[in-house]
Length: 387
Image (cartoon, rainbow, N blue to C red):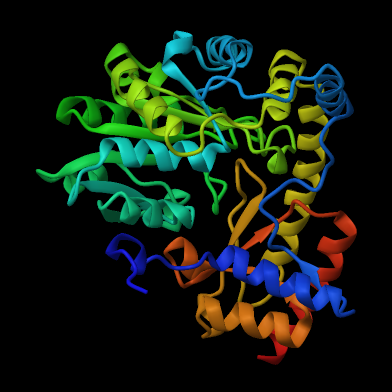
């Protein structure tokens, strides 16, 4: 069968591949410790689950408008104003089947063949593949470890060319946990505004920031950036609702209309029951998130201290999300070799950094229990001494 060119070059996700292998080993009885999780290990809060059950019992099981039910779009408008200092109309919101779906739809809508999208490295694994499917070209900028893996405004401006269409910013970031400061974002925003470059701001981890770090939405910096930015978020991470598949985007009205039209003819509406639960999540207090954050801080501190005590490994303390990006360059192994051997020889699953654009690192998630983190790091410490 002939396969379309736009998907022939797509690669499978190394995140899912390693996680899948680890799960298969567990099913066969192997005691695997997995640091691969891209989702909180906490259950969805009870009050959110109850609202979904209520929706089912009341028969809220039919189609909603493709771009999301009005009550949820209004809740998102109020959330963006309250938390992000962003003023949007419900017509500027599209509710989607997860934030990944929002990102995909944006790129499909704004990219023509050959348009360039600037992506900071390390990046979330799906960004380059989404650009490929949109027939665009990914242009990579290295965020160096000495700058907490963040790109600079100078790097951004240097990468802008005639066909540059957009910049993707992910803060807090997967896989590094880096958080851009307001000043750093302002410098980037000034350049984007000057050149008329769209910014796709992936803010899915916004509520998972630690210590003195502060999340800032780049669209909130000035009216020009508001008109150039697509703000993407969802309920997967902060509310531990990964399987519910509710994400959303906010952006310029004309572009959002076209994204809504695209969704009309692709997926149509997101799950109605999950939408009802999302209204409850966004209109309730953040108490459940705060409890989860406190636990993540404890785990983060422990995992950072333990890794930095292992000869040959090092990590900088992340300011957000629930990952550490561990430097393995001193081991002499590339990330895929490291991850495969660690799983086979020590029964520990980590994600190779090559999938995030940097082969000198591995990603470990601390969205797992303290007991599992301790056990896994004990195994890693012993194994590294043997390689």
